[in-house]
Length: 321
Image (cartoon, rainbow, N blue to C red; front, top):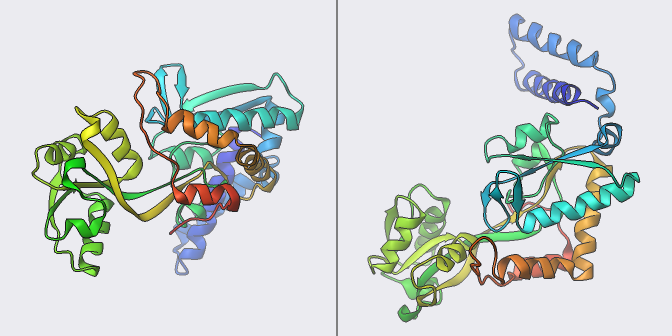
């Protein structure tokens, strides 16, 4: 299956969605949609496009990576990416080799961004994304997600000397969050619902938000917990800060693959399930979240969340929202 055929399938899907969404389509739009349909229908094998067949026929699997999503996927050089999600990807590739009986299967790795990762997967440019992508119901309309391999959510970073352990300890105090973040909205709502009377400061970015806490202009920083652990590990005095509070707005991360491809999803889910059952998943987690990681040997010191521990048994691929 060629990339052109995959793109044709994507255009057809989008064209049909547009038709169903507009009952009063004018003649020009109808003509355009009809042309798309006719062009795609002429492509060989488009209706049976499946990832394992595509890989087998080309003897190549193309996977994506993120260039700065520490510790999930990040580039150490222009040609080498490492991380927790990269290790998961490599395990999946090994299982694809075994399934297709192709020990010399070629592997191509391409970088993706938050903006292009979904369209490039859908149009066939690459075959699998394991990174730090949140599994949402909205994204589930375009792609499928494997068993969740991480859970993140809004928590707090505070000074250890502040004795702040949870949101109730912040009553009447000031919280900082990056400008425009969902974290501020979540904590504002929590404050209103629980009559905490919190005050808020907006930091222009992560670094400034951390500095505001370090300078005691705010009692805590509200942000995704994995980012908080990274900020703490790279701060001037990591031991003076701690990540605290219950997790709000839990978001699951999952490897992403094309929709309506049960054979490939079964393989990807099977790999992750095997790793979880064997204990290899927990070992990989400890390697990237609780041990020194390249290039500077920083330790995030982030223990496995209760949600992720539960999913080692539940093995859910469901979105949280």
